Image 1 (cartoon, one colour):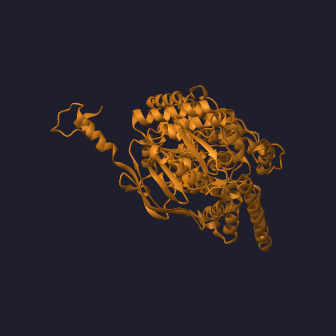
Image 2 (cartoon, rainbow over the protein chains, first blue to last red):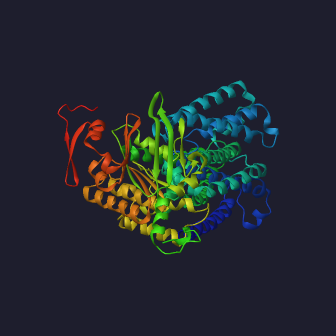
Image 3 (cartoon, chains in turn cyan, red):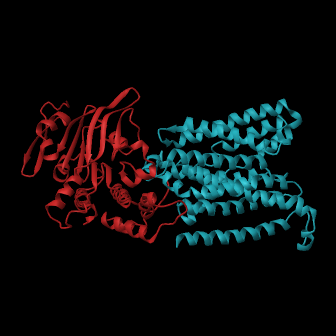
Length: 320
Length: 286
């Protein structure tokens, strides 16, 4: 019965998302009615890929956030806070400097490699026994983010001709979205979400602790590795298409848990839909609020996410 | 009663023959520990340990703090790998079992079971059905019935919608026990399951454990500090001392003044069916 409710919520969410995508497509600097929109190159070449990409990245970051929160058993984690997004952006920056953009998967692959290195570093530094200590985990993420932005700044100074493109990765924006990026990101994100839904019951059990999960029949180390590779792959490809967008993975799963409870079999699919909607609306606001100029979408998500993060820290204070 | 165990040439009457078969069956060793050594960093906690766990018995695993009781449970359940020696379940080393197979053979109630995420008690107990479910498969009606039964037996059914923050330590512990019961394993390992409970609930849980041991022939290994409870309820004793086994065998023969004095450094005497403990005049542990 409960699973049917989840399917119903997801179906309603998808309908709302489809309506929102159509509605957002009409908004923008160029005003169009439906007929004009269908025949306009502004829609097909600029707005449509941008909208689809923001939906995919929103879903991807939210689902990864929900997964990281279960894997690390910590409600305060998401790809941005952990520094994985920054790690992936370093790979993207290096790929641009090396001229790997010409290859189809060049930037994504480099982002994946540095993203994986980052997550291994976090794991090695922050794990105390089987438990991730909140303070150590967050400080590790913050320090890695600082370190990586320092390295990226250094790379930018050395290669001033490519500075614009690298800045884009550190700020986060969908302005340069195209169908090529959609084609690269879509399969990874959709398969990744499917994979995480497949392991969603294991994620529930991981929340009870590694040893408890194993005594309940989960091959903990194997499942953790598979999930970390899937999530990092999703984050890396999302970041390589639109740069670093913060706090989506934190805000969305928390709001979703308020509605559907802690069961990841519901949290993961509903987060995908809600995250897609959230980033779509943020990006539409970013490109329409101050026309003709554009706000960086990352700053909008941070405006919403950072206060929530502080609130969660405040709420968790008694557990320190 | 299941007669399929009887050899075909025998008459299927529950007579002496049948009883002797049960005896043969129950004397089979479930778990065999050979020359087991395990330690943390430089310190060996368990040294060259040998013991056997027999099917259908109710074991108390006792010893002073830090003597390796929890470590031994982790090794028995395959959560830790022996540095030397082996642990075999039904003749096969535990590290050759998959986590899923192990979860169908052994359930584990751990000392601490806290999570920052808010699963309801019912959802927590339902996790005990995981070893029997395929991925993406929903719980069946039977799973729900088993969970309901286990929660009623541990007196936690009224807490089914409660989240961890809304339950006391004792209630949480009973929920964890219900989850282990829902795993429906022939062996249950329990790490101090009554330590957070008031005396009424301690008796309730011990009675329940005795009942599942006697009626369902589930082998129980219980880490317990309360000597009196162990004395009253458990029929087998494993006494750990200084990294080795001081005694393994029947509870009534093993829990002697001499052994208690050696392990815990307290004096004891038996009055009726109870142990009376008193501090040694020197107050020093051996």
